[in-house]
Length: 62
Length: 314
Image 1 (cartoon, rainbow over the protein chains, first blue to last red):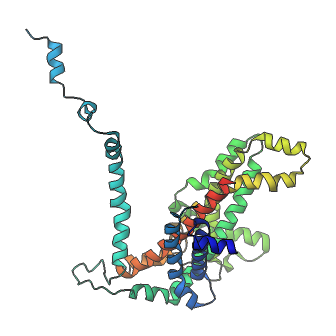
Image 2 (image 1 turned 30 degrees about the vertical axis):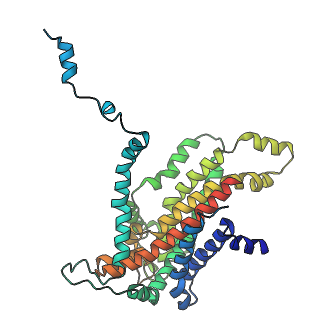
Image 3 (image 1 turned 180 degrees about the vertical axis):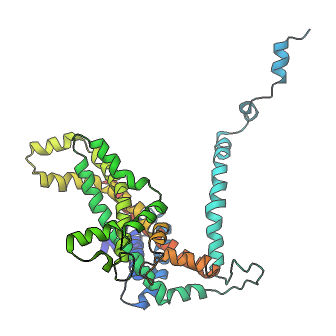
């Protein structure tokens, strides 16, 4: 866990990509889940944030 | 008197290579790549940027002379608070999940079975991949006949096996069967594609690995889970990526089979998008809808490509 936080602070690709992947997966789940309209409403913002983050952090050093 | 051969040589224009001899390798490389970049910009990038721009307006393509207003995030807010579109997303998710599930399961099993040497192997492979080569329009039309309650083969088979009268239910009508009907047709059509990719993966595994496992007395079950599955996994993931993106955009076959009905039971997001754009002519609104779908597919594809690279590195 501390390695993950250290990676984030040092702007390393691995943990940031993991975070972006989690956001995208969460956004897609929120878009297609049948439980709450509020989740659906915020889904696009979460997916967009994850996708933009993924594009940026894929240029970070390993 | 001048030599006719020399005269002909002088009259011939310099070859292109001689004329561009002064250009650097880098410039020549750019000259070759430029048409592709230009086409990419004109066909892909420009329409994408234009769609983003339209998504913030109330533009209607059937009223080109009407003044276009900038509406900010209104289109996005309307879409993301609409119960109907939320339901369409769930229909799309249902279709996507079950088609991928069945296609991977059946496709991999078929590939595994067909990877053995037996008589008629090639003929069987050709027969299995036939549905994939048909046009979705043709597939949609003939499955409509197969699903016909009175004369269709599917209802007849159900009557034969279960005793339920054939004309008492309709696979494409009300009753809740329609979403499963389109899943069956898509699985029938595209399982061969997954099978072919898995077959390529299975055939890329060298025999000596299995021979070494045999010497180590690994059981067939263990060989399957520790050799076959991990080595086919990158191929399988590639197949899932291709089919996932295609099925997220699925349109033609479902329109021909059910047209999105009965009610909105099979109304996938892509069909709804087409209605908004070209039947209701809400171009700005449908542009926002398209951007939402695009970002979702792009995000998923990014995750998948990353996972694929990780699996390949193992």
